[in-house]
Length: 638
Ligand code: ATP
Ligand code: MG
Image 1 (tube, rainbow, N blue to C red):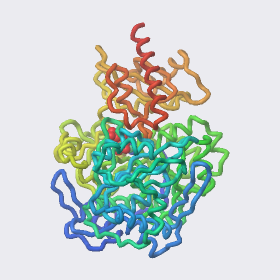
Image 2 (cartoon, protein in one colour):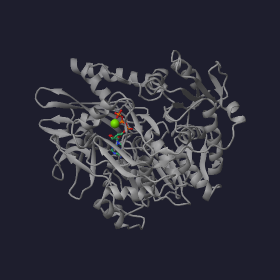
Image 3 (tube, helix red, strand yellow):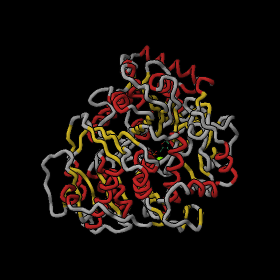
Image 4 (cartoon, rainbow, N blue to C red):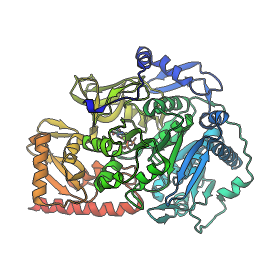
């Protein structure tokens, strides 16, 4: 493992020790890094399953993300915005502060008050951040919806949150096409009379139909005053609602607070990325997902970081787009997803190798388990064997990272495929059905045993569902829904979703272990597995495999891959059926939707697919399903 002994020279053993001794005081010490208008009277009120942090404290997220930085260094670059086609904008903290103040006044002029919900449906443009921070400044609750969603998905979310304002753009761009966002919003809110206004940013400059509800961004901003006092909000005041990816079912409206959430982000952003003044940070997540909220918007801004914000798709117009951006802006920290990495890897090493990536010093991943094979590729080809990789495990519900290496704090031996250990101040365990911690090297369910500052307040308007989803399997621990294993050194290995665990001949197999087994074959770019009932084995494995560029599916290759999986995992992992497909069904956040494959394999209804990839991909994916279905049928009737 010495190949991956990576630290950044930081060795702060005191922090972890303090956290272990008294996690409550520990988090209060971290909270002191933020600006509070008034100090809290209770660090934590824990009324299970409801945790409230820094109660009595008065704080404002936009004040911490902007004013605090502007007072020290107004000319610091906040955003290096890269448009889809090479257009760029440089925005300083002072610029951003002015825009946010102005837009806060715009919202007020539209009658927005503390506690009102505002839906934001914008592409990856700086005005998306401006809108969010303006809501935060006046105490409105933002609900950001990924700009690839359909009218139906928007309608559900606007209705659920009861938003009185929707902020959108005339259009956005996707792979060279204009997406008519305003038109989609019109369809979504028709009949929703409680929506009072739609603010329209002129991004694509396409003709749109304006109704009496609609206001143009530029008109509203023209005379807005650049001075808006931030509201002194309760620490527990809701900052935002965000719907989960919907990988496992219907998206849930996760509600986050302010003081605890910001404390979690301030701390983890520093520990994980060891952020320095000179860094150029680039997180590829869309702000429509929690990674964007936490590690594009709040985390980096709280630290006055400079970051690249990119409007377009990672592989458009060329497969080199990411490497081009890293070279152009001399990015030092790059944070992306295993899905994106598997795609880059599929395109071949020649592309990244022809760019200067020498500015990079730290790499990160989030969203799914990273296959060891892909980890090594990232480490060798992108990081040139000199950049630590932080594999960060967390969820929309946890607010910020929970399990990850923290090179900003301590040196650690990295192990490809393991997210390593929990961050200081959180108590994570792997337990059995009864809730007892399992022995090392034994598989079980990942739980959080103590409240943590970034934890969700509840599910929007649904305390009962909150209790049911996270606190009913185990009464005193938060149930993450993930399956995991802790090795004898305390490293955690994520094995996939607990609901997706396969039970083959008495063995429990996580989807991630199986899929990583497939991906470790030289021809395989991506894989997804699911189980179908089997008379003898209990469950049989069905594998879907996407090949790397340059390979084509054949009976010989199929047998070779099956032999490979038997060798690396064991005969138990032998799939009943293996299908070559050109793409896998994924959520718009880039995660494989195994429940769809399972449904198709079993011939069940496919259920809620509103969070499947972007508009154009939905039909492609459905065709792929049909192909899979057909081939399964063929096989069944053989
Ligand atoms: P839904 O809850 O609606 O099914 P979702 O769980 O996909 O959607 P997110 O909150 O975006 O929505 O994703 C969190 C999940 O992503 C985790 O529960 C875990 O399964 C997976 N995940 C995130 N980061 C990692 C990681 N580093 N390693 C392994 N799995 C990860
Ligand atoms: Mg989830």
